[in-house]
Every structure is written in C-alpha cells, then in structure tokens.
Image: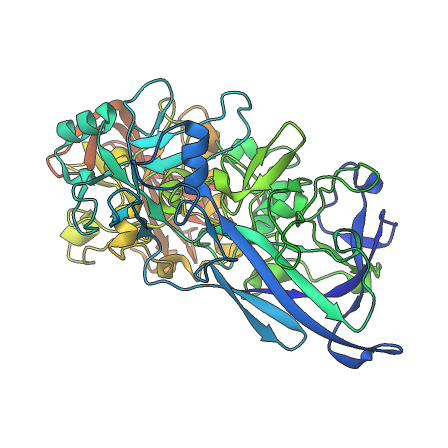
Length: 599
C-alpha cells in the first residue's frame, strides 16, 4: 500500500499532560518525543520572512538473503556474490523497490508493483559468466534447523529473542538446471514418504526467492531556511514495505481494544495461544542503525543514541496534536470500527516479533533494534507459519490453524479468529459441495479447508509440511479478495462466538487458547429465524454455525497428496446468535441445549 509522508517543524521534548500520545507506555514521561508544531509546504506563505521549497528522497534496503548466508555460515553456490543483488537490494542502486510520487506538500512512497508476490532470484555467476538461479545447498536436518517439518529454521544461538537473519527460509524448490528458472522441481509434488526423506536429508540445491519487502527512510530536504546539522535537526522518517495485510480494514490497535474490553488487562493468553494484537506504535525500540540516509550516505538515518546518550526509541510512536479533553471532544463509541478507510500508520502494524510481520527484531552488543531482515524468506513462507499458529498477528494474517488440523498438545495453537469455510476454500469432498450447494474453491492462501468425511468418522485437512505458499504465490493462487471487506466488528463477532462456544461445550479446558476442541466447520448464518434446522426458537438474526470435534492425536497421510486424516472421537454442533447458543453432542440420544449469552 502507498504510504504518505510530510514534513513538519517539530519540538523535541518530554511530554506534557495535554500532549496526545497513542498508547502511552511506562517510562514515556522520561522519554523525548517529536511533537508536531507546523506543517511545511512550498512558497512564501508557510513561514514568515522565508520562501521555502521541499524535495523528498528515499533509500530502502533488503538484505534478507545476504543475512541468511553471512549469519548461518551456509555458503551460496560458488561464483555467486552475496554482497550484490539479489542477496542485498538497495534503492540507491536499483529502482525496483519503491518509488516516490509528490502529492501537494507531501509525498507518497509507492511499493513497485509486480505480477507475482514472489519471484525466483537470479544473478550472473562470476565463474560461469551465466545468469543463474541464486541458490544454496540445503543442510541435513539436525537440532532445531527445521520447523513444521519442511521449513529451514535459524535462531540466534546467543540471543533467542533476536532475529539476526531470516528465521524461516523455503527449501522445497530443488534447482535442476541453474540457468533455467523453469527447470525447478517443486518437491511438494513428491509422494509423502519420498518428500519427507528428501527434505530432511538435504544435500540438494534449493532456489532463493525475492519478495520486495524492505526497510529504509524518507527524508524531506527544505531549501530557503537554515536547517542545521542533519543528524540532529533534519530527521529521517522510518519506512517499511512489509508483507500484504490480508485484513486491510482491521488494525492491531482494534484487536488490542477488543482484548482489553473482553479479556481485561493481561488477558491475551486466554484467547491467543501465540502472538497477539499489540501494535507497533506501543513498542519503544530503536531502529536499525545500519540504514543510511539518501542525502548523506555516510550517516545513519537512525542513530541508536542522542547527544545525551539516551536511546532513540520513539520512532514508531503515534503522536498527535494537543488533547482538547472534555466529553464533547470524545469520539463516539466504536465509531472507528466502522470507518472503511485503511491506514499505513504503526497502530495498524504488529508489535510482536517472533519473527514479526511488518518488521522484525534484531540487535548488537550496543542495542536491540527493529530490522526487517529477520523475517522469513520469501514472506509467503512466513505467512504460512504465522497463519497456522492461531493467526499470530490477528489483524494481518488469517487464522489457518484449522486448515492444517493443528491443536494441543502437539501444537501450541488453536483457532482464535475463525475463518469461514468458504474463505478457507471448499474441497471437492466438502459436504456442501457434495450436496450441490457450492462448487469447489481454493481459499485466500490457495489451500482448501478441513471437512468431515466417512460418516463424520474422519476429519480431512491440509498437511502443513507439504503445503507451500511460495508455490501458491507463484501460481497466482494467493488472493486478498476473500477477506478484504472483513472489518473489525466482524472480527469481534467471530472471536466472541468462538469464546462463547468453548465456554459452553463440555470439554476441558474451557479456554480458547488451549482447548482440545478442533473447529472443523464454520459457516455464517444470515437469519436463524429462517432456518428449519435451528435448535431453539430463541435463536434469531445473524449468527454462526460451528461444528467441533475432539480428534485422535495421531493421523495418517491421505491418498490425495498434501492431505492428512485424523479420526473423530467426539463431535459437537453449535448454533450461535446474539441471544444465545444452542449446542449438542452429536449422538442419537442428544438434544439441543440453549444457553443465553452474557454481553
């Protein structure tokens, strides 16, 4: 998405009582913030006794692939230079990361559009003098260098919380002919046992991919007035191009608001087994000091400390004008949740780094800081793992936990933000397809969701190890369209319905983040009053039909490649409306029980 930047005169000082800081944090009273005073624009009317002119410049960098090799010690194939593109890409030397478009007194930073979300990386080999696929030899599986079976994982051995290189990297595309990008074997197409043996044994050349995520800065140059020393008085703005936001109408701050209202302070772990909704605007972190300015390339755009040796850690804070106070100036309750506009501000971005969504978290002996090179490579590899883990960043990535049949204790993941069956994709053997009510589809991620089969005795779901979002992205199967219109209030309805269902069903623990209940099917209901299958006349209006199962822990590969089967021990039906829930265990003697919902 484009992001708008503008130049302001600002005052550097500690906050006062009437200053507006979104999501104030402990210690903010002792920190220095930049408070806006006056917006700058061209001409003689902006400032007294001066005629000024603004020009904008940028510099962005992507170095995930270089960091992968330099930090892991895994060499690129002989003749490939990890200090050149595509291992490191810098907009100072190439123009396919971002562009600038002047809009009045401000500027839009525009990510360069490409036909595919990810592309095969290539470079001219200095030994063969041919353009070849950027690649490396996959190490054998050992220790914790695999995640979800078939993703290469790298963790900093000294600082577990830091991501000094991409945490995950795709290793499921074997290069057969280095000079022919069309001659790459998608290992996911192998039979299950051969696939597992090949990926875990390693020893083959895997292709690198580029994905256009990057980080950098935007600088406003002002002529007509004296600015002073650039590093102290002429400050850069932090800029990121991150992975696509699959919920553009929902912000991390929105979900944080829901969590505080419904769960109370510190209650996130009741609903989210992993991750959470904390926004980047509520984090106080330094920014990658290795990012350089476009106007003064010898200077760091974001030094770690100021002249008083205090950390500069407020770059991602959201600062407004003076707070007017008083009830007449308070926004109408929940009004912001129905605003259809999108945002590029850090209250929409994620402030949870493991490794992160918009940006990751790295550091040196001097300081910890934000840096994007810790994110997965390419980002569809990361998207799969984040989506599978109960929507790790609930305003950005859809919850695909049930797509892959994950539940405790094997996985620290349960469905936290239910995605409807049609949004996950309908398999040809899904019951609604077999009844002729729907046609088979693929979901937002190119996969197809779970379903009951064999008389409800089996749940069929996608196999996370043999699912490949990189392959899906290259094939054009990943789409933002299925979820682009899902707003914050709808997300809240789904999360509330999940919480209420887990609370009434007779399975312990009755906690969303650790329940043994697996959500097999989720369908929206327009009006329960028009449904002949409702269990109680008190069900009225909109709602959901959820079908849960308690599954055997172990499963087996289906005959169909990429699918997995688990046996059903018990199953339940939940009919959910604003007035209450009708539920029953599916057995011959059971009837529906109605329980009112407390709101």
